[in-house]
Image (cartoon, rainbow, N blue to C red; front, side, top):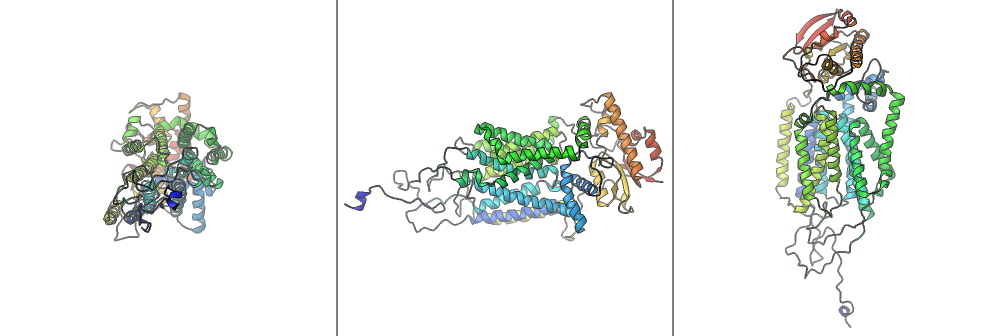
Length: 613
């Protein structure tokens, strides 16, 4: 009896993942997709060059400058919510920035340099952590896809923020990213249906982030000259295997790593408490998806909750005035700052809503009932939660859109990779040359519009406003106390920090005053919130008292007053009305007495200047 009669069923060995289906076992593995690798490598370095030009070289934004200024004052013993500093934000960001402030004092380096270095370090840690999670979800990410993810990460988290690099909203998006990605592991760990392995040579049903690559397909094997028919194909796929621990078991992340991810997300949310909506939305989704409460006992979510509780306890013990004084104050006056209607908020964030729409449409197009949960799914959910947080703040400011923009952009990029996988989109040989040309054009345009000049490569425009007139501060020695009565943070913080002056005020702008003015004299738009008369009188007294105490404490050499009463001047959050700020303060006899020691100097732009006699 022959061997074939003993065993009539042919024995075949499944081909290796990176091999091309062929009868000839000597066919070498398919080469890497070198055009895609070269293209995304070029784009990655170009995007980092653009980030240098618009995010790293320009001056730090005014909000970040204020937080750095406050951190330095704290190191010198100033109480955060005491009589010398009245900050509206939660204390965490200032506490975190005491580290670069201390290093700046120790090393005699600019605090802004150390601040940006710290942001870059945070970006690197988050990028590596996020890649680790993606490799657990898709263990065989091809080099082309890794370079494409690097390009996307730099574009989203370094270019998109621009001068808002290091804003609390930007840091929030960074710190929450690993948590959002790791939540996908939770959904996959609860999957009991194994993911079948597609036959080599028929990639129509292959999952995204395929484990194979070739020279002309992004993440897919090259098509053979002739696809074998079902009747003649004797190569059988291996039987379905249960999910391997490397792919679907969240325990591949160590306990310490899971805890770290939760702490990072907790810190991010403590920076911007509105975005507690992110974990609420994601955990609710997971609860409905997995139908088990055990997910809430994950080390990640437990450490996230513990971080939030520790933050509240620290506030209660270290800075109780934030809860007892600042929060009630914000409840009474913040509505005048965040006063935009829903329609106005959408008009101020068209790019966000267009991005969200495109991402959602692509997600619904690619969605299949048998497709396992993808990171893009939870990123879209996080983007929706951050959009709602943007609505709640009511200001329409760009930097408050950064978390939603970041999450939607990341989701869109992952969906585009999936689309390229499913469509087996080819990468032509000329693509690297096109990427090089595009990179050079993008860098040239970025340099031109950012104001960078190759004639003086070591100098860079500050990026800060020239209002108030810089000549006001030209001859003032370092450390000179200066008061700037304005509703613009852009006008108060930058000149103080860039000229190394002392801010002779407890607040960085008159953020309490608009709510008082709108209730006392409801000209322009009617106030959406009416302050009770007793509380209004108390707020009026507080604002006058603070200003008098500040002027008496620091005796500023120079006082600048924004002329909101001028019809040609529009004051922030008071654009629809024209109030005489100086006249309002002079209603108080104590202020008039203090201000009598000052004489009018001159007018420049929208400011009047007064100097100490």
